[in-house]
Image (tube, rainbow, N blue to C red; front, side):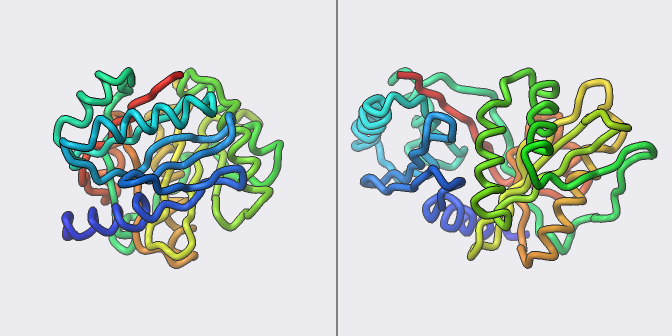
Length: 258
């Protein structure tokens, strides 16, 4: 993979040319910043910027003012190659709180090992309705220890508005949900994004996460996508590397609460 070329394509398609991730969201370009504005239940934040040292602080202040008028907490999604090089420090000075760093990993679907199947006793079901969404949110809360209300709202809205833009799955042991994940599809681009892959602690290390990645990758192939993208935590990065994903840069969420 030509890392520089694929990263430039990702920046152009998925960040500068970002599309709303749900029916209650809109994407706006303000100066040299691209942001998504959504409801209080959706994701609000900056997805792309092209700033220099002279204008960065003013652009940051503008975003703070605009989202604060809306009463919205928002995230500035900072990538390791974004400029200026001290943008992270500028965000912290302005009152943002940084979250754990992740690794942007991308794979060409044709190069992936897609044969991984769930272990014995685990069945993978597609999520198509509110009952399935509740199972996904339940796994999310158990796996990550965070509230699943925003995920529940967003996923149900996506499935209701346009089911072709999202693929969600849940892994069950008997009738107990033990792992879940989703894939977001952006028509007209070459990237499908893998999100929310999480497994309950007692079920980790058995190959379930790997099987859900392979399941979604097969769905991306069937829909004609060339690349898969993941913001990987340190726990999932080794699994993704074994499957064929390559690290391209880092990404760090910076969160501002009015």
